Image 1 (tube, rainbow, N blue to C red):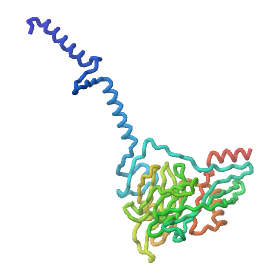
Image 2 (cartoon, one colour; image 1 turned 30 degrees about the vertical axis):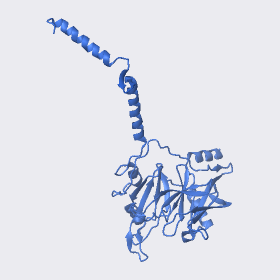
Image 3 (tube, rainbow, N blue to C red; image 1 turned 90 degrees about the vertical axis):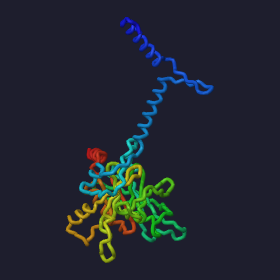
Length: 350
């Protein structure tokens, strides 16, 4: 050590400077591994690490993450509905885009005051769904047509296509299947619900076949029996499926369970949540003065309200066709207060 403090300070400063130059030198560090030399570029390693970290974050965000608890969507839809902890809850994928195409075929607006809609009917043949000759095969029939509404005279007419489409499946429960009780457009596709197996089928009209998509189990989802789906609607880009809305009883009216009073919500990726809507169904029944063991069956429900014209049209159609219990007719009309229709009527009046 020098006796001069100033010289010692200069020497220390030079030593620190030499160390910094050695560490942060632009020359890559070299390591000898066997007969090879490994060069490590500090900036390159930092860049690779940053890219890897960003990739992990993106992968984490796009993967569906499960969670427990009541979702905001559930609260928004059902209000006073209860979960009781029975649900398979999933957050929606941030990178999932909803196909809002509806209807699948746009209505035709005539300058004579008519609106023509493309419609379809599907059969629920109960035990007659079993194919008469093909083994382990169940069948449902789909028929397409056009419904024409005269907005001014409040009259409706229907024309059916000649073709009857046969939809087949090999999936059944207790020897029964393909008892389709609802058609619904969701995420740009047509779906049908089987009230025997609980299967939601995608209906492929290009190849005239059904593709199993989701299986809904009864009640809170912890049952081996399929959910008896009777109606479906869409709200907030979520498919909602419900059942009879009444208690499940014996032939003598004895209470067995409340499974038909649960409601299911399904995301675009097929994630299912189970909602106990027993009290809500009871309130609907009590509102018209009916109490258990009296029954109020829910065989249809829609999110949107239709005005008098559409209601009259549907009632007349059902009456004229004399729809039997084994056939469920699903007609999704454009809302009568839609901007497109208002513009159309305004143009006609002018």
